[in-house]
Structure formats: structure tokens, C-alpha cells
Length: 82
Image 1: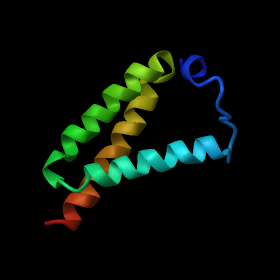
Image 2: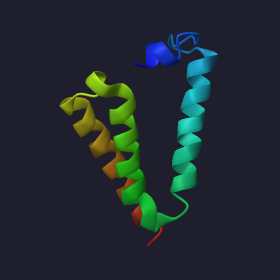
Image 3: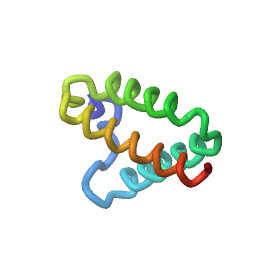
Image 4: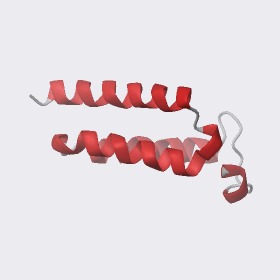
């Protein structure tokens, strides 16, 4: 699916486009983590967005891995801001 929308981007490892996108995602996570009470909702919204955009590539295994990562991320932030 992403190849259709982003066919003009270089998505090879270390490409400027990929690094820029990664930076945007990390900044969005940082912004979302400012309000600690919204981390569960943020995690859920990210999973839904990934599922919508990746469709068949977002397998049950990928979903479980991302959910586990986001849960751990939220737990670390919640512990930090107690």
C-alpha cells in the first residue's frame, strides 16, 4: 500500500526520506507523551493507523509486536511521571 502513495520516495535503509519519516514518528510520540493520561489512547490510535495503512502487511504478529512495544513505551513513561 505504501508503495502506491510513496512510490517517489527512496525507502532504502538509511535514505534521507526514511530518516525524515522516522524523525516525524519519534517527534509525534514525544508530543503524545506530554499528557501521560492519553498514552493508552495514543497507542490504540497508532495501532489503528498502522492497520489501515499497512493492511495485509500488518499481520497478527506485527500487531502483537507493535502493541507490546507501545505498551512497554507507555509503562516506562508512566513510571517516570508518577
